[in-house]
Length: 331
Length: 290
Image 1 (tube, one colour):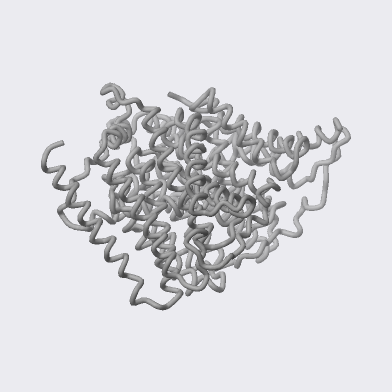
Image 2: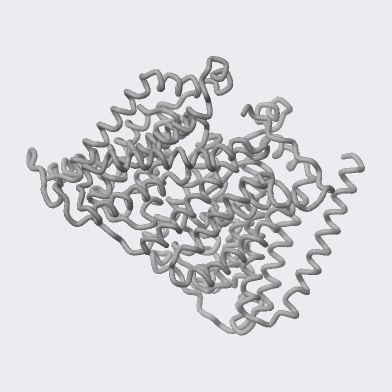
């Protein structure tokens, strides 16, 4: 790697540290529970979108079924805690491992498919997961899993009386996924994955093992998505197939990355910072009556941003960013 | 048991014809310009609401509404192409992702709009010429609205196949083969794309009219049918009309038989499992090109 790239990477790490510091201090002057909750949800989606970005952005495999890894992660940690008493601090790693392994199982047939065939296969795999959990009594079927509250604790990651600790749990999740993406960007894997994304044939001719690259990206992406599911389940204290496995959740995970800027370090975070508060605020101020205006606004914003900033909102952040190579497919 | 199975097989056949028509619209658009319309289910939802509203206001039977709704949906399809898709195709970055998420955004927008105008509750057409009547055939009973829906979908499908053999159909085919070269022989690509969207929307619109005659309407009704439609198109092979027909019938049958043999709540799992198995053997679907 030449010096310019190394310098840019170091600068990004410093930017990351500054942003981390700001986010550590951010909730301190805010005492309003609603706002703190909003920030926590935003952080969770930023981390989930970053996890999606590892497969969808860097490796270019548009998965529309990430709710599966998210939901399974939530179920694994919740069931380990409820049935076996294993605390979620450990359970979330089990959740990540199971979700990552599941991503490999799903990837094995699905990565033979390309383009839209792949995207639709992931939708279908997600739907299968949803339907199976809905009909599976061992995991609570349609009623889901209720996580009993045993007092505020860093071991069980339960904090009902205060929001602040969970802010730091969610922030740690964002920081770790960001760092993972940063490491991947500079690693040999990152280069291979981007080659797979840009041109499969060229990548293969350079000796990149396509299938392996996709599987590795899927496993890492699935792992972090599963961990996110565990953190989410512990935060809300209750999960059922509709809240964690439904198809639209897959879109909610992918959207911040897509609109913020796919395959970039800051895209998922910027996308989540815009979309999540927008969706939550419009739902609580406009959607309470079930009027549908919140959905219209949300859908409208997606259309406008996707058309006006196809390279993502991150491109608004000034000229220091490396120029992206435009898509050179025939129009 | 044989009668139950036969009954299920016939219902599956009729539902399969409907799935085939919904998928045909999607497949047509994809074949033409490599765009998957993720708002396809919502377009069907709009057609169903249109049918319901016209029926409520005038009492006009759904069967007679077919041409009206088809024309309205054709116009909507052209408008969606001109307003959104043409722009999405012309962006410089991430073209594939932009078109996916533009149509997703449109789907969410349309769902919200339907919620705003019609409210969230289920609505259904309670009386029509055919409602409540059944056909008795070789020991099985079939509700007449479903039979009519199957037949109309078959006719619409035949019409689509006929269109694909006309001058316009050849222009469609040529545009699909090589988008850039057609400009040299005087085919207006943009116009062909717009007409393709119109036709696709009209096809799903006709399916919507027939579905509305025996199925409830709600803002989310499109979502379930859309997943089936994606599976149908991927199973048949993107861009192939014959593939959409075969896959639609296959899915209708698998769904109906899984419901009888296993459990109704697992009927879609059966469909999805078969789809994944087929794609392992044929990654581009049964009739997919390339």
